[in-house]
Image (tube, rainbow, N blue to C red; front, side):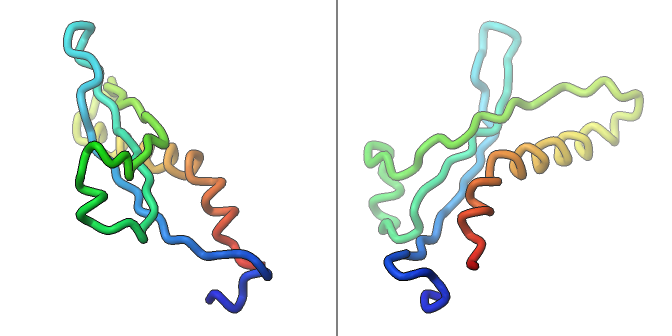
Length: 100
């Protein structure tokens, strides 16, 4: 794979992490998915330290309360919206990952 890269380029693996968390408690209890990004070559002991700043906030994706009359569709709609947001946010990573 490295041989397919242009001269001087280096391949880096990344780790994406997502966590659903409350961002407000007093103003209606808003919930969001935090999308974090890190390099994969950082040792796990360093990544797990909160003070290491190994993970950076890449996106804050709000969780929407749907009003569709069928409650079973709420989780499906939430998942579709979340993945569509991931497609938009990660578009630059997808472009960078293409080997020409």
